[in-house]
Image (cartoon, rainbow, N blue to C red; front, side):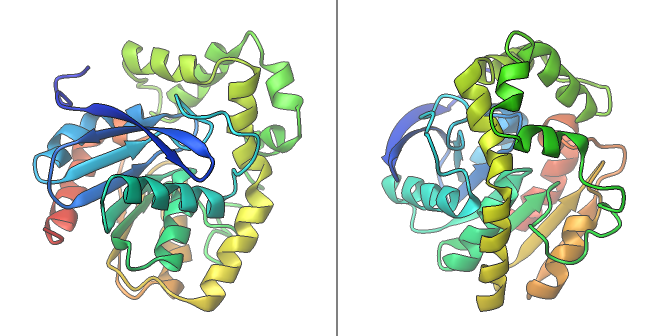
Length: 284
């Protein structure tokens, strides 16, 4: 375990029909960290320790990813938000600041809209929120190529068997602008995404995107983000997420991290901490 995260405990929590693998560290106001693809809770390795000095950090593997249950269904953001509610409840956390990246962002967004009393502060990074306006420039050339590939039922998990490591290496290099991640983190991610069932679960997030987009549209029609929120962009999403959130958030701060790849917590952890620390400190 890296020196920055010496006191992490791994918990197994039964919620919403799955058994979740959850990393927990520190004490104080709860901070829930939600990762994306192709990550596990280990994407937060560099920031858990510093955050745990003043917070109780809760970092689950999302449904089907990492060491949790390889569920047959439930990869839409609404179901995943219910998973997150159950994890907080099982850990006795009546509310949390929620920090999310990539596939975790729609989950955090829906949780904040549906259960605002649970989400004291919201930080979202490097993702888009369904078909909300504001991402037109980013999508001008169409969505990223892998969205279509991952969305075809059964295709990706059939084609990639035996080549998972090479496939993930491409995402890890692209997500850090060629700088890469540590061998330990890389090997943990490759292990988590190796095998037909692991790939099926990962690609189910993409196959559930139409359902997630509908859920987001319905939630926005019924409410707004009322808690303090922060949108953080890097390469390639930039400020598209911030533009999507502006019309639906009462109190939004936007940031763009220069020379930073998509996997912000591993590529530029210190820059991320410089943004998170004061934002979350106001919640203590």
